[in-house]
Image (cartoon, rainbow, N blue to C red; front, side, top):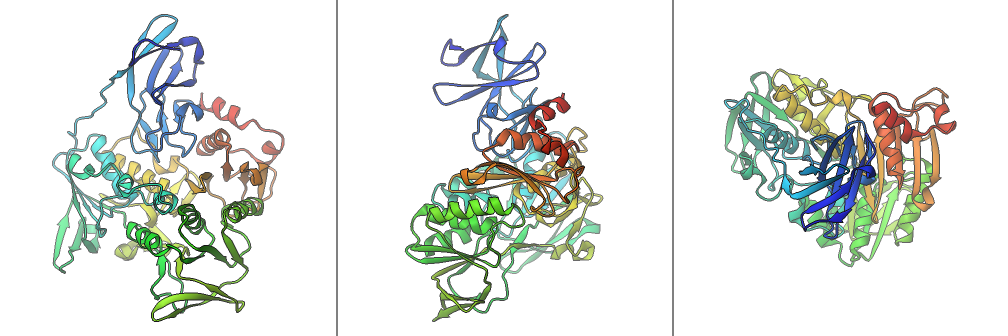
Length: 535
């Protein structure tokens, strides 16, 4: 490969296998991705639009280019977004066929703009400004919807990336402006009526109507052709005595994160909970380097115990301890103590006490389903695989109990919320070229000290497992099964540092061909099999 001019790059066709792809890093830090099918070549910006990963380091399975970091997926022929957490497709470049080589002109971008000429006389009303609501509106506008879109949010901020609060913002590694989804002017640029600081007090599904209250208490009704309810979840606050004291926080919103950052300077921080939010909060504050001490409290002697095995849990504990975090295992919280209305210590159930100036409750969340109580199941709103509750009415995100490739379940993960938005937008537009939720799988990741543990699928327990590699060296992949049968197919996997293997597993799982315990133990080549089945 040589640079002909600052914008033109010449690439040998022989470098790229049929049905494959290859990325080329440029001196200006840009990346060009070339895909090939027979004698058809396509050229794209090779950085994933989500977080900038080199897509050439990912995996191509059939017409899917899958990002190695967070499994955003794109069509290898035109760059169309197939799977979040990316929120847009790839920029495509013009190329010239020179016989044995190709010339890519990175200044000549193929225009993929779609006219917003569909359903122009309709109104879509979205309740909730989180990931699911944002993705619904964003997809509608970028796939041809020309009607009115209104988002009603109780938040005082435009939609933003909540997962990055505990991964980057709390660590001081990302400014608030970079968390805004679509940028500061997203709503106005896309002709979306974003109504902040307004609370929806009632949803009338049969009438496709909501009742809105503003901060002054005034009420109004809004009726639409399509109603999308994506009210998200709220932190669970255990019935600890003293949970109301000043200095006790949950971490769900931007304001929460700002308060915790401001309060933690030179203070003793105690995190209650060993799930991924608690672990991420401890990691971020330790990286920020301002807290006097950080202690994580957990009843179990494992962390993330519903997700990973004891071996992986031990490796994560060691990762934190090496950074200076202390753990208090094997005891619950008896009381949060305070003086003058301010927290000063925690009494554990074994009678011991921990100094605490700041307490973070990482004790889970509960879905905000109260607006749909009349049609709500105890563990989530029952919807079909297009997230539809009834004609024209959709429930999605953390509140939805929907059927995906793994079965019917309610999942509180960012990628799932974005999937819901994509599926809902396609349902409103009656598009049959977008996979339903039933054809998708869950995926999430947790970032701690710059290391990213990724998890694909859903397992009832992490204890029926097969482990390859070394969690202590942060290099492993672990497969999970719902029982110990030899012919049982893996239902989930987690990994650190084995990105292509996890992508391959995800693709097999998505297609209903996850490997069995016997196949994995026999040395099953998961990458080869994923690519073979995708042809």
